[in-house]
Length: 322
Image (tube, rainbow, N blue to C red; front, side, top):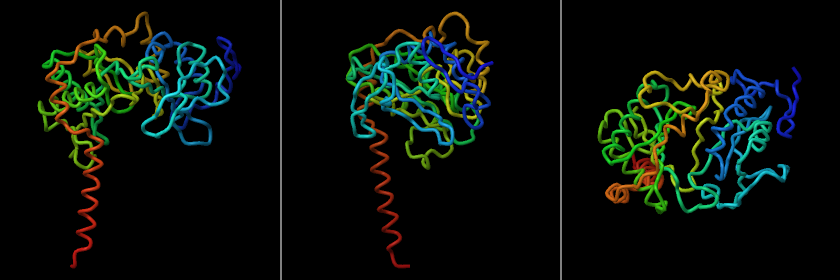
């Protein structure tokens, strides 16, 4: 089989090269996978500023936000302010198969999208809870934490869809009926995480500082506004090239992130779109949830101040005479 070919007018090259170290997959596997799931992943990317993680031979994986100057003129883009890098970024918009194939040929493996659209950058479309296990912990603890969040949502009259993150954790998405100020969605996300933590504080924690988690599963409530999250169906730069895959709530005990890779999910690709089918209708956020969330400090800001306080305390202790 030739190593080069053309699809939808896009030249695909070096398809038989290894994708990355420990991927157990080639560039062709990536292209074939993304092309096979295009009708499912494109709705997750469409209209949203896109950042990708690329692997280039001889380099460490890197995240690319700016659309390269050598990109074809037919790729759509939007200029938006990136809070993390404090600058304007020309983000790509991946709306069609041709653009997706071009990115795949650029060895773009991970597809991260904002929680807002380019058309409405002031309106967050989903509330997202990110579940992150302790290093080396079993996946069943992640499943347990996901169920805590599901219960906290249900207690608030809400429901969400769940997927593997493609790494070691899970993501829970709750579509939001808008318009709602981004600050209110962020507040509601913090409140849901806090309520889930209270259901089983021995299992889960909202502590942002890693050393304060004491081996518990971290309920990350910081995805808000311009923050990004890996899209459903996106591959990840992890051993085995796993993908972020939708999971039915009733079958959480039967899955593991390693079950879903660019080479193994071919048998799962059938008619329909499980992520879209599992996603509830957009829901109005309860006022009490938003109000509670506004009483909870923003985790990153609180962690920054706490880090500075601890550093001052450490310096003071070091300066004390022995």
